[in-house]
Length: 139
Image (cartoon, rainbow, N blue to C red; front, side, top):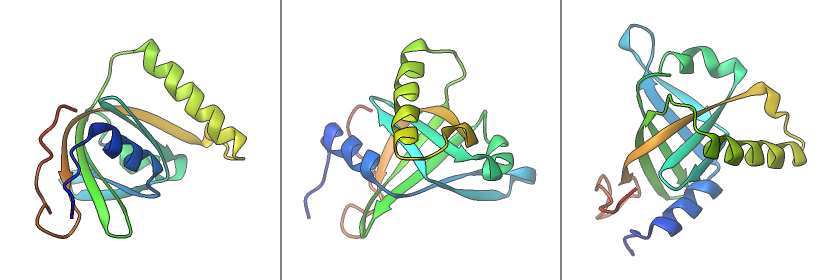
């Protein structure tokens, strides 16, 4: 098995992955998991879209660190990051473009709330010799 350290290859994998979950501490510090159906990775950011019906629990994590796990079949990664609270015009443009692409697919992006996180670390979750290993590359 090849250890994937190429940032572009990992970002492309994450953007095409359909099975994504975010873990965070919810009410009373109990761990909670939310399925993420809408996300996009750009440079060192991940923009997570959560449907409004799941938003209440997710809002508890809005100012905390988050771990996002993505996998398809066997291969997968875990991304750890922290919410970006400052207003960044560059990322608004990327998000607007992504929302337009969702609308073109017939998905009502009005019912999806997006939050932007800075990626701090990426780990392998693929079974095998690299499982749990931090990927040594700049994110």
